[in-house]
Length: 297
Image: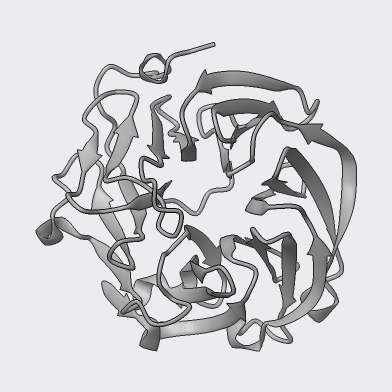
C-alpha cells in the first residue's frame, strides 16, 4: 500500500487543467494546474447563482459530442431538490444557468452524471438510492427524458468504460457494472457481472490514465485500484474521506478530501497532488477535482 505522496510517476508537477466544484460559491471553476487558483486565473466557469436546486455542485465531467463538440455534465443540489445539467463548453468562457442545453430536476440528491456515447443516454447517480437513465429522441440533449429508474443503495458515482462497454457505478459497499442495451429513448441498463465489495461508502470512480486497464475507486477511507477485466481490487492508499481521486497519465495523482463537519456542504479548500504543489482557495469547499479531458481512459 502506498502513501499519497509516493504514487507520483514524475518529479515535477505535470501541466494540465483542473476543474473544481466549489460548494461554497456554487461555482464550477477551471484552472491551470500550476497557476495560482485566484479569480484572475479562472480559465472557464459555470455559475449557478445558488438558485434552489442548483446550489452545491457535486460533479463536473467533460465529454465529446458530434453536435456540440465538448460538453460539460454537471450535478447540483441538496437532499430532495437537485439538478442534472449539460452545457456547451466551447460557447463562451463564463457560463450561467441561461446557457444550459438541458437540465432535469432530481430529488434523490444527485452526486454524479455520465453520458454513454453511441446510445445517447445520460445516467445520473442519486445518492438517495437511485440511478436515473435519460434517453433523447434526437441528437439534441434538450430532448432527454427519463426512461428508466433503478434502485442502487447510496449511488454516488457513475463512469463509462469505453474499453469494455460497461457502465460502472459505486455506492454503499458495492461497485457494480451494467451493460447499456438499446439507444436513444430505448436505452436501458442491465446488470453485468458479479458485484465487487468495498469496505466503506463508495464515493467516486475515475480512470487511471496512467494504467488504462484499471479504475480508481474511493470510499470513506480508501482508494482502490480495480482491474476492469478481472475485477480484482487492490487497496492503493488509505485516506480520510476522499471525495475524488484520479491519476494523470504522467503518473501523478490528484485528490480532494472532506474536512468539514457541516453535513450540508462538503469538501475542503485544498486540492492535493502527489507531486506536491497543492492548490488552495480560501473559503472554498471543493467536493471534486476533475482533469480537463474528454477521455474515458
